[in-house]
Amino acid sequence: MKIRVLSVVAASLLVAACASGPQEGGDASGKGAGAIVPGSAEDFVAKAKDRVFFAFDRSDLDAAAVKTLMGQVAWLKTYPNAMVTIEGHTDPRGTAEYNIGLGERRANAVKQFLKAQGIADARMKVVSYGKERPAVEGTTEYAYAQDRRAVTVVAK
Image (tube, rainbow, N blue to C red; front, side, top):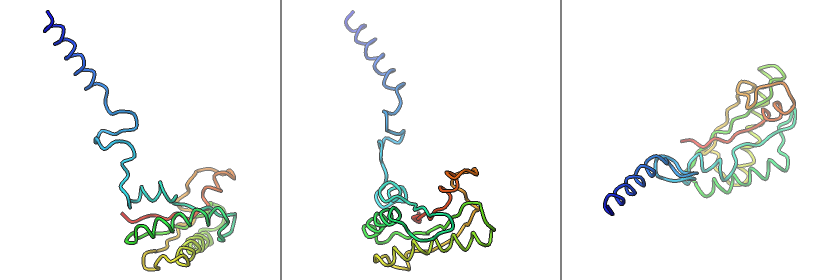
């Protein structure tokens, strides 16, 4: 009788363990939550933040952008082999030609700041997408503000 009860309990525990799936915050790989590889693109986004924002029709860096970029500098100095592409973006207002130029000025402002902080020019490249890759669809000031950005992307 005891063996039968123990068998039922053991079987119930086995079924419960198999049916529960990954623990909260974990993943099916068994690596657990937050298994971000140090030095990876995901690590950069998590630790340094990957984007800075600009005022309408501007490419100068404000205090919030400088604070974010200092985090990027620290991360890039920790991982000296990391290469980045700095993407310039605009909101949809203006001509395509004008916005490509504005996006390039924004990306170059970020690049020049990083370079002035000791990040080698050879580690960075710049690309402008202008208004072609909006972060947020829509014609509200909120959407426009999210689109006026430069994004630093770590090469995989």
